Image 1 (cartoon, helix red, strand yellow):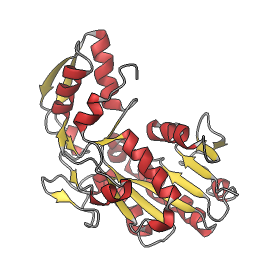
Image 2 (tube, rainbow, N blue to C red; image 1 turned 60 degrees about the horizontal axis):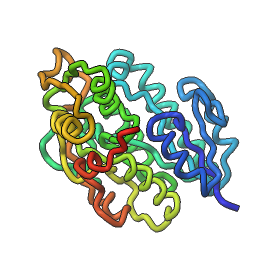
Image 3 (cartoon, one colour; image 1 turned 90 degrees about the vertical axis):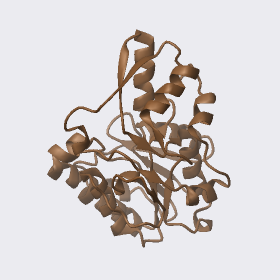
Length: 283
């Protein structure tokens, strides 16, 4: 009997694509607040709702969190309850049932720096959101039933930034692109493939923490330039300084190594040029 895969946050950007990929070959159960097989609200529901469904050897893909920097700053107690306390309770309950958990952490566990952060480097967050993610890493990094994947900015059909570029290109309005926002951009296709490999080869993956990152650090303005050149020729954008206070809750520059991710995929992750060159204009 095949293990079941539960995706918490299945209606989100990554979760929806992952569900489509996996459901053709494996029993997949979507978990979330709306339009899911199992209704579960991480902010208030009992972890037993999920743990009672799990059998030893099942998988819980944990994608849910409060990721808004403003909420994590302005409603810190509420965000901590969801992102740390309730998340800890759900993962603990799942592993106590013998289920394997893939937890989606973030490159935000590292503070703003031009240095390259390796998979094994200790977190040094400079934002509330990053600190909350690093708290979960500390709690479960030694648990053999938990794999931690640190997501850099994920680009693919439906991500917020390229959706904004597309909307402004269609409306022929000018969009502001902030200077100084740099990440190791990673392809959505590589992210969902990496998670699929973890599920299919759990015991054969020697890493407990993997930076799901692309090979290069790229700025938002460079990404906008590429999309304007190759995907949205009617895009009109202006590169400006971020408004006052914008960086109070965000990290400007994070550069993460893709060493473990390359080993996991069996090849280097694709770069932003490959992503743009293969972009489906209909997406």
